[in-house]
Image 1 (cartoon, rainbow, N blue to C red):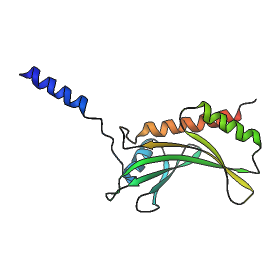
Image 2: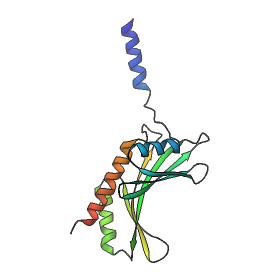
Image 3: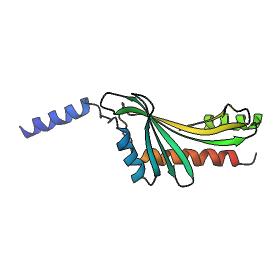
Image 4: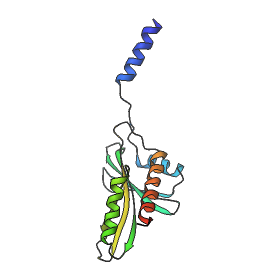
Length: 159
């Protein structure tokens, strides 16, 4: 009897997928604070989008929480950090950024004009789908930190 019950429990646990938990921005802020971030602020940008701004070590970053429902829990997240660059990037900077995107499996680097024709935003981002077996946790921030470090290291390497 116990054997049949145990087999049933195992069969159900295999058949039921792991559940991910959408997260409320306030709880995401607690995760970031527990992971060592400072100056964590939550701003709602609309009914279904919130942004958390924070500082960790020497850099500032944001987390955009999207696809938020009526209970104000959100099912996707995008970490991003940008740095202002004076002047215009040359072709080699775009080329090295594309090489980074081709060579590193996590995150995405980008170079965008800031709109004032004098500066550019250089940055990285990392998206997370919280609907499919992934939870928002400290490991996400740790991975994002590694993405920032790998991009800045890649861009400072000599050719």
